[in-house]
Length: 256
Image 1 (cartoon, rainbow, N blue to C red):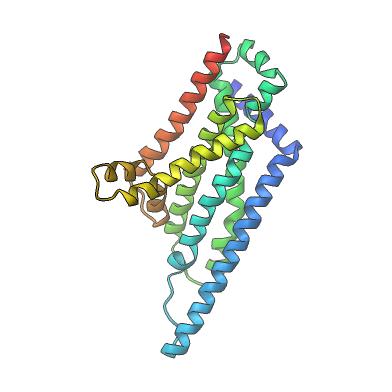
Image 2 (cartoon, helix red, strand yellow; image 1 turned 90 degrees about the vertical axis):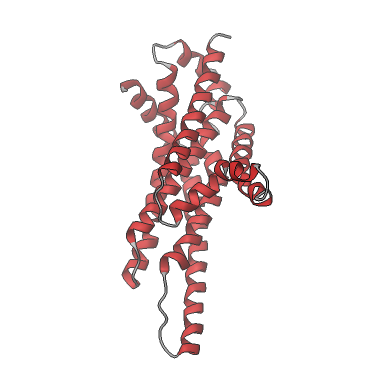
C-alpha cells in the first residue's frame, strides 16, 4: 500500500503542477454551474406561473425539479471531462519512456495501476465537493431531502469511478494522449448509449439484458434516491473490470 500511495502522491503533484487538473475542474464546475442556474431559473418561473393560476404558493419538490436534471447534466459532462483527466495517466509514461523504469522497479503493476486510479479519483472527488454549494443554496432558501441528494452524489461518484477505470484502460493502450482521450470517450459513450438501444428493443428478449448493461439505468436509480445492491454490484464490477483489463495490458507490455 505504501507504493500505491507514493505513486498516487506523485500523480497528484503532476496533476496540480500542470494546468490539466485546473482546466478540467474549471470546465466541469462552470458548465455544471451554468446549467444549474438555468434549471433554478426555470423552476422559479414555473412556480410563479402556478402561483398565478392557483393563487397560492405551490408545493415544489426541489429534488425532482432541480437536482434530478442537475445530476443528469453532471453525468453527461463527466463523459466529456473524465477522459481528459485520465488520458495522460499511462500514455505519457509511455511517450517519455518512464514506463520502462516503472516496469523494472520493485513496484508491482497493481500498485502502479491503483496509484494512478486513486490520484484521478481524488481529483474527481474534489470536483464533486466543489459543487456542494448547489444543495447548500437550495437548503438555505428552501426545503430539500438531503438523503436523496447524497444518494445522487453517491451514484455520480461511482459513475465517475467507472469512467476513470475505463479511461485508465484507454490510456494503457497507447502513448498518444489524444487517442487515449477519444478511446476513453468512445467507451463510456457506448456504455451510455446501450440504454437507448435497450429502449428500442424493449419488446425483444435482449431488452432486459441490455437494460441491465446500461450504465444510465443504474445511475438513474441513485439519482431517484434509491440504493439497490444490484446497482452497487454493477458499478463496482465495471470498475474492477476496467482495472483488471488495465492490469493485463500492463502485464503483457512488461514482457515485450
